[in-house]
Image (tube, rainbow, N blue to C red):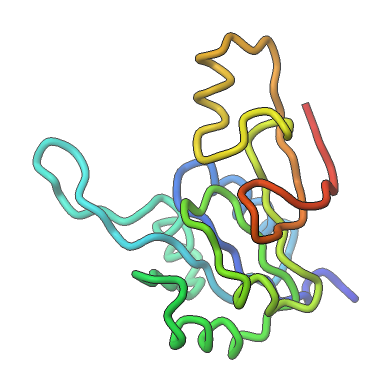
Length: 157
């Protein structure tokens, strides 16, 4: 199957996610929607601001979904209706329920900011720095129901 015919739903929130989404777009993958966390108050003034991934997706006119709860049946149905072939997750920030992980026919993969099994969890880059790691990298893996667990696809330092 040609990459521009594979329908992808991308889950991501912070700045870490933007270059990954940008690379997929630049390489002509078909991103049918971006899922990101809801806009949140930031800074001293607590001004409501969109996540970096939302800003990037909107510039490219990619539809954005910002569910409050991932286990909401309406949200699950929205993803089903998009009929993705693949879900790609990069620092989304929430655990994705099995009902959503099982929707795409090619599965759900995660781009994780460490060389697993080192530094599982939400802050792998920060932990690598705090622990004085001399080098780190990125792991791409299939997602299962556990945190940063699943079959490894690739690692890069």
